[in-house]
Image (cartoon, protein in one colour):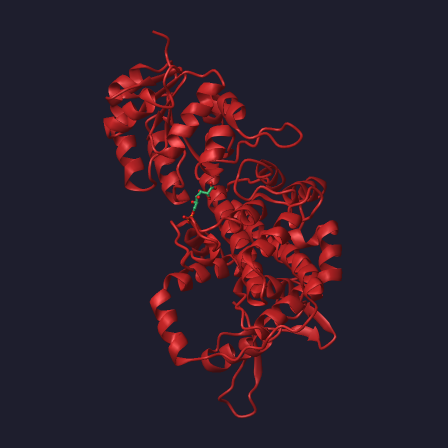
Length: 495
Ligand code: 6PG
């Protein structure tokens, strides 16, 4: 019997869809699931008559493969991944490859890569984005691991990946060990940010009296071919908001509870940001907003105890829609700037050697955050790989410079109408902070720390000179004031 080119373990929706996708590109795929029924249902259903080989023992799965063996795990992240690796090991030889295509925590991937490398087994941790449809018709794929491991599956991945408008497959080697899963995690964090920002705009429109279908029409327009906001998430917002509640005249969106759950990647993004000291206020606001959304009972109770006064919108509707459009675009730029800054910090810390331009290129199609906008990001980093921040890219900088007042205005009007816009506010304040040569209040806090804890402070040249005071060797000088001594003398701290 013909040997299979690759195996997939895990016959949930993503595993099944990837198997069908690979088969459609002329690969023979062996499949396995912990419970045999799922494998049977798959091969007797959507995989019937296709080059998909069902197996019911892991040994048979491995035997059915050509060498070197390539086995892709599409199982729940965490313990199930470790369990399968453990169970597969007795059947594998040095040079064989395990691929983890789930949303795994990148530090687990680093650990697994190390453990398997010591046994000569290659390991790829890869992000696969695009949901069921993406997996079936073309996902964005973010593989990390040994380069030689990637070479073994490069052709398969390029064949099954989504193709951007210029025909480029949305896959590229991301970097060593945990790089692929880290990048997928940040993709998801950015996805949370996008979703929250869109949600805040939609909720604002609703609060100034627009109906769901009217908002859907605005979103559809914002998804026009040449619109700067054109993206998959705007497209599905337009589409889903028109949906009626089964058999009634009500819109489904008006009946869906305001509770957004999450599986963990957004939280990991914020945890990494905290560990690496990278501010990501928009993405964090998106995670915090999901947390607040889940505390429905508390909000119901609090609403009975406290009423926050809010005004009625009496401005020009057409004008505020245009303002909201540009505000959303600026907030999106800000949110991506935050996510990219986090990628860059992690790249340094974990030696991922990430190439931001190439990552943005992969995200242009197939994945959940796919958007026209990612082509602009790709170009920005292609023309200047050393950009200090996405906001500094000339095209974005000029738009932000002339339109940030709209984001401020939108936030102001939203607050006056009683609409919380945590992510929008985070996006605006991020822009304001990162462009402040002297940060408001930082000097005050620095002084307070020195006052109560002798923690020291740095100095600037003067009220009109925001540059740091340095010594002859260019090292920043540090000072402490003896707050408790008479005359409060200042001394330089030398270590
Ligand atoms: C993707 C998605 C996918 C999944 C998210 C949902 O890129 O295809 O991001 O990975 O839908 O994990 O995450 P939450 O359940 O945390 O919203």
